Amino acid sequence: MNIIEFKNITVLRNKTRILDGVDLTIVSGGNTAILGPNGSGKSTLIKLMTREIYPYNMEPNTFEVFGEKVWDVLALRGKLGIVSDSMAQLVNPDVTCFETVVSSFYNTTNMYDMTADKKATEKSMDSLEFMDVGHLKNRFISEVSTGEARRVLIARALAHNPKALMLDEPTNALDIAAVHKFRATMSKIAKNGVTVIIATHTLQDVIPEIKNIVMLKEGKIFLNAVKKQALTKKNLEGLFGIKVELSEDKGHYLMK
Image (cartoon, rainbow, N blue to C red):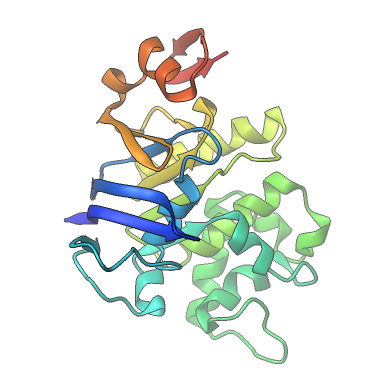
């Protein structure tokens, strides 16, 4: 099944084409990194996938997620987990890590006077434990580190057993140790059968399980290829417009 099927997708903002004629297919199991410099349109592309925004409808296009042209947000959440800065900003910092996760079952970000049912409680705790943050269940989000909070948000997304997980610039503001833990976590999620889609401007987010690289530049697809063919010195220099040095170690890439 195709998770994403976009053809001739254009997004306008103030009459400027933020995305211009984008064609993109992501298949189930096709772990993908969307790579490009800041301002290339990556976050706009993610917002299209999550139906936060819609394409310019005056041009013929295909705009499908899991084969559907129209989605109910709650139905989409059960198939596509989402972790982004915009989502993080909606989370109440004065609720516990457990509440942050379990509240997703009730389409809110806190529980107030509600009590979670047994199924939601069990799924939430299982997800926190899977993300190695079960010990933080009673800590407020405002009290944990940025890396720990990111893992709690991923737990919130995974609690619904989605078929795919989408992350927008996931290692922003993380220190070296947190980045290392994040990459290990993403590998564990991918090996667990969840299709991982990462939008990033840095190669450190490209875990070994990533199969395909979509390079985005100035709102257009610069290159769409399997990882080994895409991640070359020539392609990266063309994408970022600078001279680079590229190295690879056991599936992890470094550019400087």
